[in-house]
Length: 191
Image (cartoon, rainbow, N blue to C red):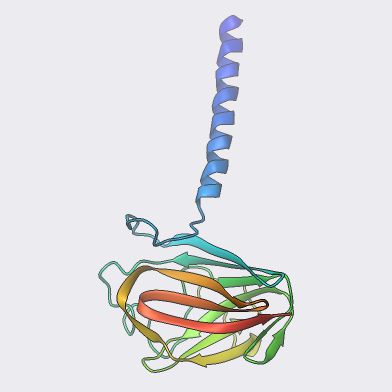
C-alpha cells in the first residue's frame, strides 16, 4: 500500500511539474525583441511590442521571420502583392482607444496590418479581419485605411522582422516595421 501511495504522489508531482513547465513555456513563447540576441532558430518567432501613446495601450502581435541568407524583397516576399507583414497568422494591431491614421478615424479594437511592398513605394493596410492565416482570407473591401509610404533603406541589416511603436507627442506616435535593410512606418494619433 505504501508503494502505491508513493507512486501516486510521484505521479501527482510529475503532473504538477509538467503543468508548471507548460505555463512557463507559454510565457516564454512571445519574444519582445527578436533581434536582441544571436539568431539560432530557423522558424519564425512569435513576437510582440506593447506601448502607450497618450492614454491608449497599443499591442502588435506578429511572427518574426529571419533573413537567413535569403533574398527577401522580390524573392521570399514578392513585390506588388498583399503580404501579411510577418509570417503565419496576420499581424495584429490592438488598441483600447479610438485612433486616427492618415486622416481616417478608426474605433478602438483589433485589426490586421498588411502591406504591399514595392521597390519605390509601399502600401500599408489596416484591415478589419485580424483573424486570418497569411492572406488566405484577405478582402480589400475590409480595408479601413491604405497609406502610401516610401521605404527607408538602411546600411545595417535587421536579421529578424521587428515592429516598433514610438511615442512622438502626448497623443501622437509612429508604428514602424524593419526587416533586412528596409524600414517603413506610419503615424498614428490617439483620441
